[in-house]
Length: 334
Image (cartoon, rainbow, N blue to C red):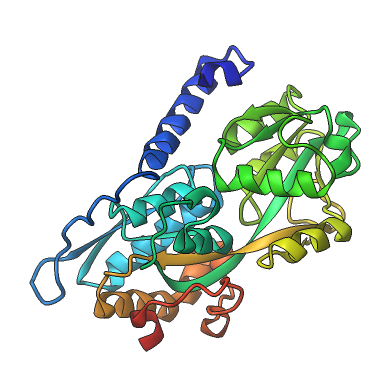
């Protein structure tokens, strides 16, 4: 089935799509039926380190590097834990892994975290009511890249275009759906959809084999930078569309990507964004989450130097725009 989605002869890209699909399917298999029990974890004071598995996103996205920076910091500064980050299919897969006990901590957009907590949308019938937030982090903007030759000037112009979206069922796919429907299009029927990774989308934008791509990632994102070196540009999201989205989904905020963020980007671009939330299992001990939270904020300046998306974060903003997701007692303690 995945092969039928693709219209390319590149073996490399086919294999990349298969890998992404396998990860996503594996994550979605756990969506139905009973949840798996959490893997036993070492208790604080037992002399064993508490294992923290931290899924992120694809290796080409900003979240992958953010997760690596956070877990590296914890390994250096919290002697009672052994943390590891790894690539994943993204936010929805991350939430399923934490819900099923396959991971302990991760990051996703606030909307998906709330949906998982309540068992709605992609998580219908499999809520994880013990899900807890550690901190709200940075805004994650939607970035729409189109080729100059496509002639696309607005989101309505995407009708009939060959357009790349992420894997079906992913948070990025859902973002594309929400926005195009708000723009008056039928999704995905009104576009020639290509279900590929950000890396493959950037490659295809460069060689002109697609008209555009939807990328949701902290700015600057490497895939967007790559595309904008090859006669592509970012498309703004109108105030009208943002207001429509906010009326239905209160977690959206208006966001500006400053001029010069990317190569050949001479003007600021307006778009929508959702806050990223670092969350965890509710059964992680208060002491462990306290230590993780303390280490994160005590070392935020150093983290900001290694990852631009973490630069300038403040504890006072950690509880803002997180869609009402409850904080873990250990985070509250800090």
